[in-house]
Amino acid sequence: MYILGIESSCDDTSAAVITDGGLLLSNVIASQKVHEEFGGVVPELASRAHQQNIVPVVDTALRRAGIERNQISAIAFTRGPGLMGSLLVGTSFAKGLSLGLRVPLVDVNHLHGHVLSHFVKRQPDDRVPEFPFLCLLISGGNSQLILVKSYNDMEVLGATIDDAAGEAFDKCAKVMGLPYPGGPHIDRLAKEGNPKAFKFARPQIPGLNYSFSGLKTSFLYTLRDALKSDPDFINKNKADLAASLQSTIIDILLAKLKKAVEQTGVRTVAIGGGVSANSGVRQAVADFCAARGLEAFIPERAFTTDNAAMVAMAGYFKYLDKDFCHYSEVPFARVSV
Ligand code: KG4
Image 1: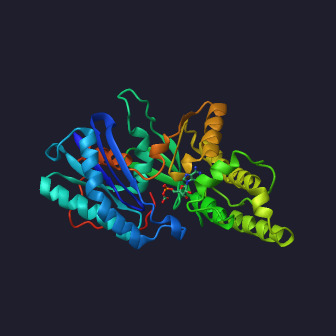
Image 2: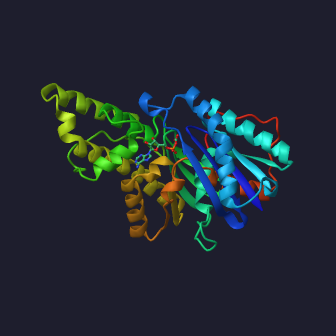
């Protein structure tokens, strides 16, 4: 069985091939540099770049997997959530190829893909999580605590009521004058800074929901006030600001994760999404799990950002269930897991 996965939800064009048991044969990602100078993803430019990238990316994925087009068993594609213009490119391409090759079409929720990326195997005996497990899904658009009961049964226990964790990283980084996306820059700077140098607001909201907008405002006000007396404040305190911001975000994330573990009694914890690439987050989750004797699944960095391996993986499970997608289905821009 060969499942071709296609991902085009935002600014990465990706194609991957997965075979029996979730074994990854190829995962090709073309990232778009065109957005850097604009300080964020420009939707129109993203869809144009997907149009240019999709044929060579799919071609390369098949070649690296060592298979021909006529060996493909099914085509899985990201149907949403994401940017509509970007999603349309992958969706239309997947539909066309599926019709041309006369193989089933499988639609994948991008967020399911992030959760199920933990089942992608590099080697046949790679370990995978056992159900049920908790997944902390943290990206530029989402921050959710998900109870994963099976491949296709997931319950959102908590989600952000305003900004996502990635937005908190990116917006604060922007205030510091760092390039977009700011998350990786904060991560790098934080390694040299003092996480206790500055104190920022922490949300006081009940339950398992998250909130990051108060932290963002508190960060902005700290900088605004300090800049009044010292115009060079950001430059002089870059590393300490980054370290303090990162440690506050980690504390917020971990507080609810701990609560969810206690409430559910689940013994396995996974993380996913772009922010799960953050070295501080990875270490904090690993330490937390080690201290409580929980099993931790920290994805390899290639699977933290948008990739088609996770789409092929989610598509694989739906293919096994014969849960196919009709050609009349259209992409969706917003939806929770
Ligand atoms: O899952 P993802 O690639 O896509 C979207 O949500 O669209 O996540 C992107 C987010 C951005 O906010 C980016 O700043 C953040 O993931 N990110 C990081 C790191 N790498 C990516 N945040 C903190 N530290 C990192 N190392």
